[in-house]
Structure formats: C-alpha cells, structure tokens
Length: 372
Image 1 (cartoon, helix red, strand yellow):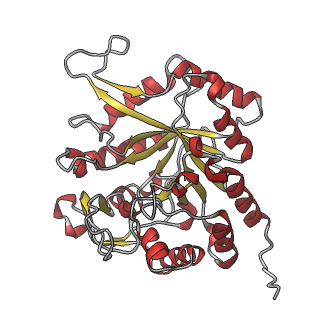
Image 2 (tube, rainbow, N blue to C red):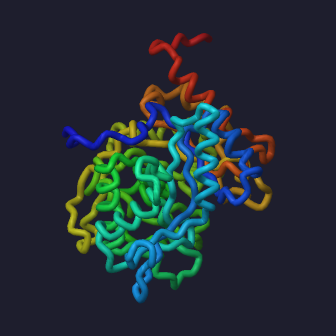
C-alpha cells in the first residue's frame, strides 16, 4: 500500500545509515572527542540519551504557560554549539535524534493528549530558533525497570497510543522517528503479544531473568506504519535469543543474522494482538520491511569480563561475513551500536568497522563472483 504523502523531511535520512547512541551530555565541549571521531568514522545518525516529559500539574511553566515540559540530560546551549561545530567541519548532513526512556526510565505522563505532548516537544525543540530545531527527530527507547513493582513493567495502551500519535505528528512536521526495541519487544521468533515487559523467554537458559517483553512495540508499528522511519533492534538485550543461539547452541554469528533476515523476509512479522483484547487489534502480519531495519549491536563493552554471556558481541568480521553470505543484507537500512563512549574498549573501533562494511555492501557489484 502506498504511504500517504509526508511533509518534506527537514533533514533527509540517508539511504544507508550508521546509527550510534551517545550518553555525552555536552557539559564540557572539550570532552566531545569520541563523538566527533565517531562522526568522522562514518556515523550519520547520532542518538542523544535521554530526555523525558516532566508533568507539572500544579504550576504551569512560566515561560510557556504549559503544564508539560521536556527535561533533558544535555546542556542545550553547548549542544547547539557542538552542532554548529559539526556543521563547520562538513558534517551538517548528520542527523541528531533525541531518545526518550531508557532502562528504568519514565514512560509518558498519563492524562495528556498527543497534541499537548507535541506542543511541549515543539517548545523545547525550537526554543527561540524558529528555523533551526535542536533535534532532527526522536527515538523511542521506553523500556522496563529493575524493580519488579515498578509501573513501567507494563506499557499502558494510553502510553502506546501517545507514542504512536506523537510519532505521526512529528513525522507530518518533517521529523524523523525511530523505534529502539530490545530484541524481545519486537521478537520475530514468536507471534505472541503482551504489553508486559517483565516476562521470561522460553529457552531453557537463565529462566529466572524476568525482563523480556513480547512484541509490545509491534502495536505502534501496526497502527502507525508510516510514522516510523527505522527500527533499531537491540540484539544486545540481556540473555537475548541471539546470545542463546550463539553462546549456548553454538550457532555461527553471521549465520544467525542470515537466518534472522531470511525469516523476516519469508514469513513476515505476524503478531497475535488478540492475546490482549484491550488493545483492539486483529492478529496480523505487521509491515516490517528490511528497509526500516537497523541491526543494533553492543560495541566493546560486551567483551567486559563481568558481562560474560549475558550480552552477545558480534565481531566486525562476523558482520562482514553475514553481508557476504546474505542476499538480503543489502536491503537492510543500516547498522548501529550502543554506545559511543565505549569506543576503543578492548581495541574495538566499531564505527570505523561498521562504516567499512556498509560502504563495501554499497559498492559491491550485484553479481558476487565466488572465488574458491
């Protein structure tokens, strides 16, 4: 089906993207070297973590008269200066997205319409710069919580609808919108659906780990497919299927990725929304084209001794081999990683290596001449 016409993108999302998260809060502009190096190495979508909606019911924000404002972890004047520096260096094409949520992070404040959320976001994102928004879009990274009693271990339907409707409004306004589901929040290995994110996986492995989801983000993609530009799947979720298949079963990492794409391409992404009648959706094949898929990996921190098998690390050579083996890999939108601040750890320079892989796949002739 044809997507309805969208507003012109304020800053176009490149055909192939290399996405990287940064937790740098721009407090010290002499301390941006890793971010700058990642951009020089080929990152063209930076995602800055994290911001949240602050609900201030009793007293309205003096400057805007609104009850809702965005609270950020970034030093905003410095962030503007840093963006200008990147422009001056010739990297004005790089997209800067801002992420909501994070592990243990807030979900969206109840009782506010998408319009109210949108107005608060616009106030924040434009400030006094009508023609130069701070961020080129947003990334949805809402997740669960360490505390089993936390209300954020379940997504309310209201919160999911706020996410979807706000995405739609931002998209119409020319902004880029991405989803960043942990592997289990958009899990192509199961058709089950739940809004809970304190569940276990079926594998006979670390069954006491109760922090997985069941396709909760699929609801947003099913209802607002045109509002989502790309989906960064976190294969580095703790005790993921990827970790189990590779560490425990012994599957070749590049073959795991080959099989993942093959399954998504051949079987689609079928989700049984009727498992939860409150969401009011039929069971369906959710549109999840490879052109929206970003394969999300952990960089060198995943090799830390104390991480063990909990987080899978995909060596650049394995990702390269996957691109060589898979005839679908060239359709994937891109690659990405968490997190820039860990670049260089254990000698892993992920941005450089992933950029090279994306570049090679772009330059490759459509005919692969196999050399024996």
